[in-house]
Length: 317
Image (cartoon, rainbow, N blue to C red; front, side, top):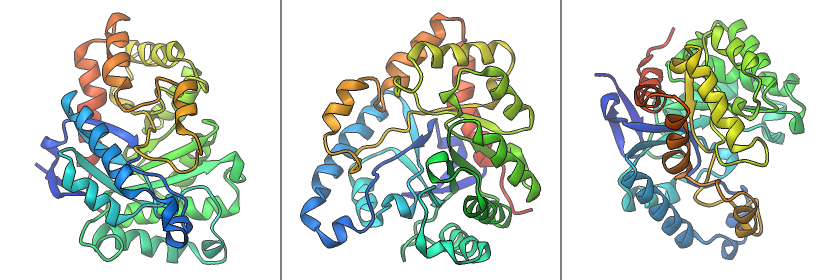
């Protein structure tokens, strides 16, 4: 069987198991802890990750895909500490978020592509640990798919073609996903090796089918963020698409994080959105899907078969 790179090293794709395609071990604001280390509770975040990943392991989840890029505060020292206290497989990413970087603003796409390829082929931040997925993002808060964002998307598309590792995206709002597909297609990408993410924030199944009909997977990957779209609407989207034959194109996750320094009072957020945690799919979503007619085989396809198939599409082209 093919293998992929993880936080622990190479992993046979047959060992991925149940996989959450869009999560975060930790999201941090770059520059804060480097200058004010007292504001970074690394031990607390490691303990949080240990607890949350253990709970996933107990629920039969084998792999988490951590889509935290360097500009989301990816920290290899922290991640290696998490590795040492957890059993779960973690797939790391290269790529770039939608927040505008002054550094990359005036530099060409080719240079951005090179650093993505380096993290995939050589390792991240001087370690031998390699990325195995490319995270790209478009958001109306950052100008949508404007010229800067298009440069980032094209850079990621070229790194994908040079290495063969898949792409997973962020979209806000979901409608930007079709524009991402346009750019990837223009770059000659095989859209079946790309996950158009966060599009589960819309209940418009016709739109979701249009993305899947072009070949891409769709990320129904914000379960628990019920203030954006309710639990019932998210579940019913999966139920309807599964009934219409789209099971092999859907991937599930929460977009949750073990620690997130963007929010001063995380407990307040958890009270407002109590389902936004790593166990929500296992504890609540799967039983609701089964109750509404989705089969266990279809659940396994979305959580086991589809991630495995995505990572088994390998090789530069």
